Amino acid sequence: MDWDGVLILAVAAVAAPLLVDRVERWVRLPGVVVEIVLGVLIGPQVLGLVETGVLLETVSQLGLAMLFFLAGFEIDFRAVRGRPIGFAALGWVVSFGIAVLALWGVGAGGAVLILAIGLCSTALGTILPIARDSGLLAGPVGPHLMAVGAVGEFAPIALLALCFSEGEHSGRTTLVIALVGLAVAAAAFGSLRRSARVGRLLSATLGTSAQLAVRLSVLVLLASVLLAAEIGVDIALGAFAAGVCMHVLLSALDEREESLVQSKLDGIGFGAVVPVFFVYTGVQFDLDALLGSPVALALIPVFLAAFALVRGAVAWVFARGSLAGGDRRALAAFAATQLPIVVIASSTAVERGLVGEAVAAAMVGAAMVSVLVFPLVGLRWARRSTASVAVEPI
Image 1 (spheres, rainbow, N blue to C red):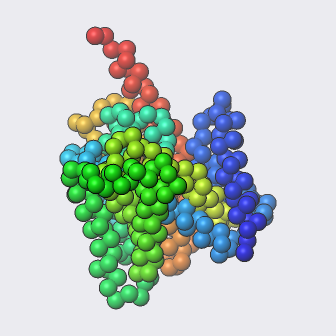
Image 2 (cartoon, rainbow, N blue to C red; image 1 turned 60 degrees about the vertical axis):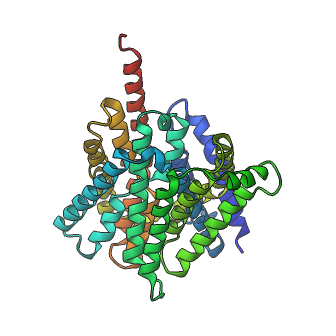
Image 3 (tube, helix red, strand yellow; image 1 turned 60 degrees about the horizontal axis):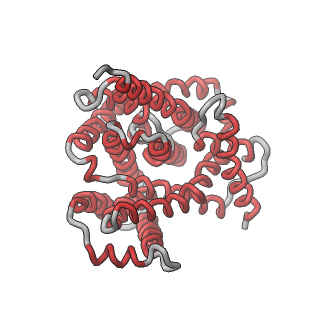
């Protein structure tokens, strides 16, 4: 068992926020980008301190599952229902149609569908900590960002599960739809009145060693991931559905207690296993394939522009009438930020022989750049919008 590798990944995860703090006086880097870069450095193609293996892959997959669980858990469907979620869903359909037509037009062949799925995602789990820490979620952009991110994370992973699963279960498609329905049903029942009995039981154990709410969250996550794995679909779908369901269940708590549970889950996720996923993504990144191919290097700005047009520009158009000025541009920038689903889609495309490793590396590289650039641009636009409102005469 490669416990040395796990320790090195943990060291990299601790080093990432320290490095972010050191360079903040010159540039504000998202921690995710630093984690991936550190993974590349300690990986087999640079320093060779960490090799890929079963144990590291398992811990990384747990981190991926926790990332999608927290993304689903963060969504308050009562806050985004109505115009935000409706426009987000319609905008995603338009984005997907544009991506399919564009890829078909450039002769992507059998890779059209899976590349389109990758282009139409939004890294909700990645941008949420950035948006939350900056206070963006509490402003007018918040509900629209949550809606765009929810659809942009859930719809692509559901399509991947339906179209590119490898399970042998005869009722796979039915069970996938059941998982999708589970999350949708949870969202629909999210507006029902809170259960005092459930709330009392969960509240009673918040300050004890029982920690029922946290244990229940972990149980639901593991059960959903196991179900997804058994039927041959990506575990991210099960994890996302589990997060949505737990958010609905824990709404029986009052706001203070719900925030406390979320803080504890964030501690488990972003404090432990999620950084391992991003560092291991860097370890697995095929740097040689990227640097050894001029075509792949040239594709990075192409994919980056595609993210901005397919997701960002469409979100900007559909936000007309709901947001204005810097807020609208900020939403577009965050909507174009991609990573986890791009990693999943590109690796699946390589495994199926639909694209070469160089193209997949270029797509992941562009997604990494999007995490570095787009949220920073979005935050700057949002601050300008806030500043302009603050100086308006009364």
